[in-house]
Length: 163
Image 1 (cartoon, rainbow, N blue to C red):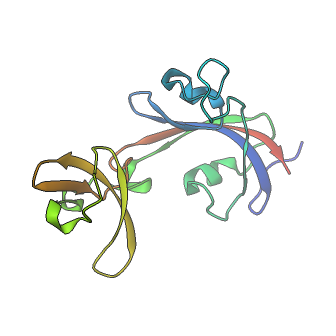
Image 2: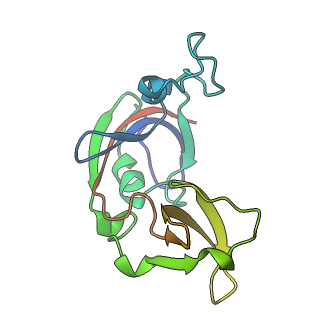
C-alpha cells in the first residue's frame, strides 16, 4: 500500500482540540452542532454538516508542520494523534499585545462590542486583526494575540487518500 512522502497531495480528516477537550477546528461538520451552527434543517444556518476532508501538499507548510511531518509514512486509513505545544502553534500569550485606546480615537460610527474582531494598522503600516476585550464609556481595550495563543493543541488525524 502506498505511503505518504514529502510532496504528495493528500486528503485528511482532522479534529483539533484544546487541553480541556474543546474542539476548535474539524473537518467534521458536527463540531458546530452544539452551537446550532451546523446547517441542518433544525437550525437553518449556513454552515454545512458534511464532513469534507482537508487537501494539502505535504511539506509545503499549508498546515501545522508537526501534522505534515506525522503524515509521512502513513497509508490511507491510518490514524494518529499529534500534540503541539503552544510555542510551536500560536506562541505564548503576550500581555503586551493587549492595549487600550480612547473612544475618541475611533471613527464616530464604530460601535465596538466585546468579542468583535477589528482590522487595524500598526506602527509599520501592517494590517493586524485585534479582538475587542473591554468596552467602557471612554475607552476600548483590544487584544492582538491570536485567539489560540498560549494553548497547547492536539490533532487527531486520519489519512483519507493520497491524491
